[in-house]
Image 1 (cartoon, rainbow, N blue to C red):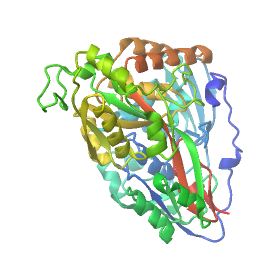
Image 2: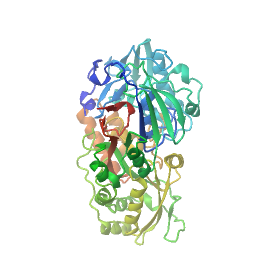
Image 3: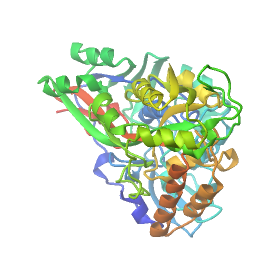
Image 4: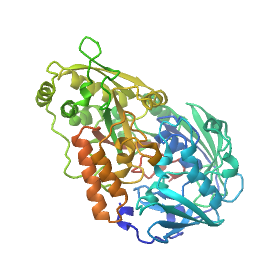
Length: 528
């Protein structure tokens, strides 16, 4: 990856990158229908840091800087940036960028958009994780803004890739719920909002005034089809021209179909379990007869380690994921900054797990309910059911309760579970993203613990993370992040299972460049 290697060097981005080069719209306007596997929970691009929401927002809104298909930072609404001193960055805005209502993008909109995430009410996972480091915004002129951090902060560019720039004029006074009707859906991106039908579809039209490369399609419909078989059937029937997340049981069929094209890529998303390590009594931990326990066994690190080594990650890869996963105990794949090469996936060892349970005082195990989304990640509920069977073999009678992501997340944010399955993509291209969001001690004021729903906290890990976030030395920062990861993994604060491999399928004659960040962009599908 490129940006960590850049460190704090002065960055002057070339505005002539081919990816964003201006181009005339194609002569033949076309309609494109694309099936997504998960519906968004909100149209407000600052409401909930959830992948399906981000996937939709990318079509309408843009950031100051963005990630390319390999998670390298590239210019977006900022044409260039310079490091004025160790604390202050200056961004030059793209003068040709306009909002969909025709108004120009200005530094006032940027300042407003960086302030707004912290004001969002009721978010299950706020975006202010990525704005907390900024302590001052100074508008130099309509197209220049300076951002100042309290301490040297090498992650600023990476953080800004997660913050969408909205129109101040169009969003002032709106609630997050207002966006579903189209209010505030005024971005600068390649498509304009037309209509949103919750859990069914969103309709878009091409922004012919877009500053960058124009999409090939004049009209796009993003259909949300969580059921795998139905989604593939829609492709085969010609109801849509492309789908994301090809059903794993049908991979061979799709690959062999001459009328289809198949694309895949290892993503930066880790699928993991998060146990309740804090509460003396946890709501879904019982004895074998279903009676509450006086003390929550998940507080014991030996129990958490037993849970981890009782998971046969290779079997999940081979039998559930059809090879589309990389078993892991890390939080990011090897290609990303901060990956710890010394952390190897643990050997599946149910007998050793039983011994650990006995040492912890649970020779006969206990009862447990695992909660999981059932429409969000590839085979999410199947993975949970498989792990439940594995845990039952070591004496932990495990039940699984699945729910659509919108329901699951709302309950998860209220700490209603004892252990849950979740996924996290390192949107910033390095391991500080999952460390800050998943396992840092809950501290909304500092933007820490955005999805740390069961309030895991290890001050030693937090101290290393804080030191890393203030280090401008890439080598030192990488070492600190690796140490922080090792602490949380050894502690069983979270239990990683695998990195997802993302897949797409299209009708023959339509091409797509697979992305590390799993995102599916209608404007990056093109006719051959």
